[in-house]
Length: 317
Image (cartoon, rainbow, N blue to C red; front, side):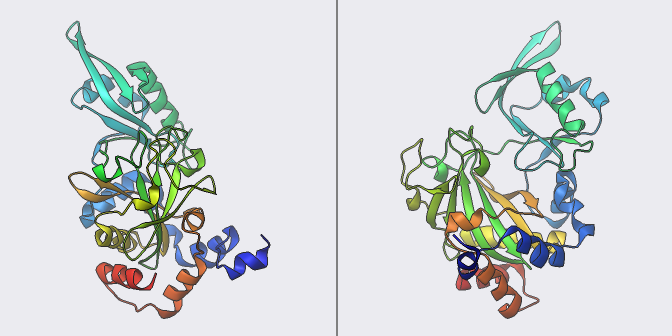
């Protein structure tokens, strides 16, 4: 497809995304609130916006010495780098196998893919995070040990292994496009499109799946469950869009990606934010971002509350 055809379809490219929207609407002084997950969690707590609970924040190698004592009080957790991206460095521990040896806790850790890690392997992974192995700029980082989120039962027929998440692009506080990322066996149970997860576009009016792709190829059914994907309708849809809209007020960045997970007990909660969200959401929706972004820029009313901005998007997109 030639550039003129992409332009006619309203497809947003990398250069326009950066030059026309990210540089113009994202003040760099606010980037740490999004790039650093510790700061994001602190900000969300102050704003009363739900996120997974942080159990431990590990800032240096010395904190690893008695890690087994600290982890013994939990049944499951997630390890992630504070400044990571695209899911790199994240390990989900779904079960801690606990024994006592010579009066001390002896722990083994079962990952989401059922592989077993011992405490030394866990420490080695955290050391890699601290060294900056997974950070955005390759600089030293912080490791977060966080509560594991359980999958909402609505996804039982639409996900393999891991937890689906919902990406919402928010521009000037208005949700403009969304998709749900569904883990597959080929993505190792992770909601990562680059690794083979499904990207399913969502109708902004009601949260219905309108299209689904795996690595840019349209699919009708989940390859592992055999379930028809277009039958999926997300619950809490107005709340999901309002929550995404609130993140604009929380961090002050005009163009962001908001990642949300549906929980069985708490409803939608924020997983993380992204100041440089990717463009594959357009393929998932078979629709371009540019017309929606320009409608917000030229026609959307200002000084609305998050709930009203979400309602505007549901009506217009």
